[in-house]
Image (tube, rainbow, N blue to C red; front, side):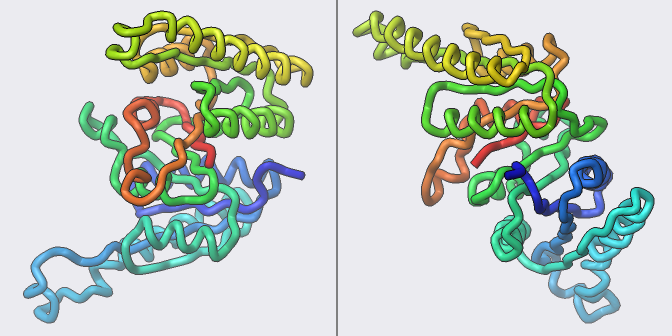
Length: 284
């Protein structure tokens, strides 16, 4: 069974989203995937007085429709068929709803972020899609490529990160990955450590067992595997290891939450996505 068969690529006409689209098209062409491309025109929140005096909603939404024409032209260059979809409404809701209606197994999104603040705040649409989506989300920064030769798997031993490790193993096997780096940054709340410092040692031993288990699983597939147990800010360590190992992609889990807590991905996941120069695959 293949990992991904049907993907939904989200575009808004920006260069970042069209770059992600082209990279996803190359990936889809190579792996023979079914492709849908979606452009969502958000609700108009400007001066309603402008409507009716020469400025129509149709004109305001024209850029989102034109983005689909650009996408189709890109797809034609690669001789791959894509199904264009245009919607109006709250973007993250439409993206999640359409992904469920089409039963896609991967959502691909571009990443904006020029300033330091924009890099950390990855955008409400992307964050909400990751929070509410039931399928994996691949976030592709501008100038990056979708490749699978070398991957970094971030794990903390939680249920969600175990799912991420399992998916990473599937991806590595199917896409002929050559090298995997599995990284964990053990953390214990300072107030807990102050009362019972031995808890950290217990936690560290569990992390070591967890990483060793997955190292053996990857190695059995003849994939060069190395584990990293680091100290420091988790997002910094993950990004540093990704850079030092010249990795192509970072794979991380998404902590299962309900209600409004879905929107709080956690500072580590958010900062990794926001600051990474390579794609991040968030496993659901």
